[in-house]
Image 1 (cartoon, rainbow, N blue to C red):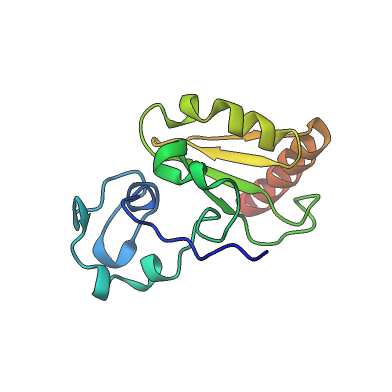
Image 2: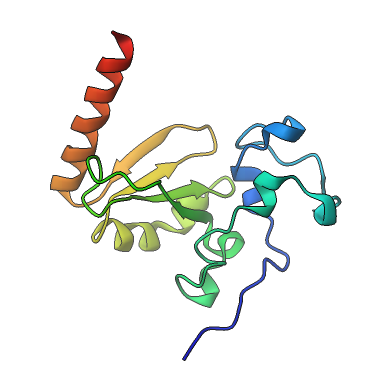
Amino acid sequence: MKQAKRYCGTCTACCTTHGIPSINKAPGDACPKLAGRCSIYEGRPAECRDFDCLWLQGMFDGADRPDRLGVVASVTSEDREQYEHGHALVLYEAYPGGFEKAFGFITKMAQKILVIVVRLDRTREVLGPPGEVARAKATAARFLAMARQ
């Protein structure tokens, strides 16, 4: 049975987690266009129109909507060299304490796949099966070293 399309409803979690350069909104800052709901929804920037979190795409339980769960979930672009499954799950903290609220969800996901958690202060941590974490860190270190040359 195909799942019915999901809608954001009152969730505005990604309006904080993601940066929107076209309106000078930094990642982690509340969007200046939010007044309870998006005040520019019909004319919102492409960065907003083009982003669908994994919950909107039908992943996870209905109760795991980002504002309720505490995290906004997406995936990295495909990179078979760095990620064993071709990508990693990226979880952005939706509000202070969001990761603590979603601890069980994060732990469950990290048992299956590489997870990159991005805190509100933009610090990151890589979690997941030990082999995948080591592989991702080694690849990232190599890319950083090449960028410094």
